[in-house]
Amino acid sequence: MATYYLIRHGTTAWVDRQLLHGITDIPLNDNGLRQAAKTAEALKGLRVQHLLSSPLSRAMQTAELIGQAVGLTPEPRAGLIEINFGWMEGKQIHDDTMGDHSILQEKIDHYWLSFIRLVSGESLNRFRKRVINEWNAIRDSLLDEDAIIVCHSGVLTAILEYCFGNAYRGSKPYYITHPCSITEIKTVDNGGYQLVRLNDHSHLKEWYPDEH
Image (cartoon, rainbow, N blue to C red; front, top):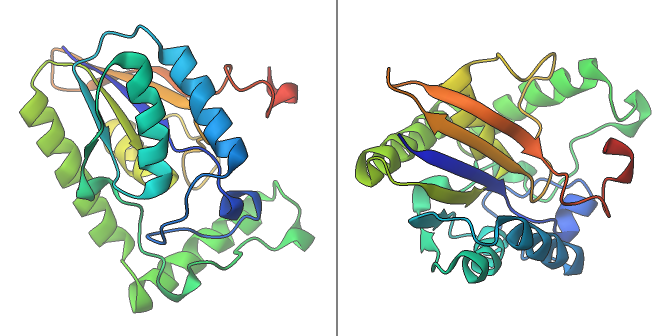
């Protein structure tokens, strides 16, 4: 059986401004680099055989710092790139007048983005198929060896929905993963998965003091 540590990349200037990244290659900002260093510290000494990453710079920078802590060099995997948002990339999707935690607004945003991706970017179905093909290729090639995988929030949602359906996302239209959070899953004997921890950001108290 294998253990996978799924890491979302650190924050960027666009994350702070709530702008859609997609395939646009935006590097980590100073906070993102510090978050990645904290995550590397949290994973230091972890005995894993592989470190895989989206090739986009925000993920690779995160993976490189983690790699220094676990003694591995990141291997870029193109299938782990974030979804292409088309002409919505670099734009803000949330309507602040609805409130930051409006479930209705989140669902409106979700389905509006699905339409935009369909006409100018990457459809949700095509994106999910790409990510799951990559996920299965990773699992098949690594066999029972453990891995750290650094990628993006959309990629993490696609993987978690594939492994667990909607079981752990509550009323949200997608799985919530904070920048540099750690999600840990294990394979089990029947070919399925066990969720060990989801969106663990306990090592990032400086950024999320009210959530611990």
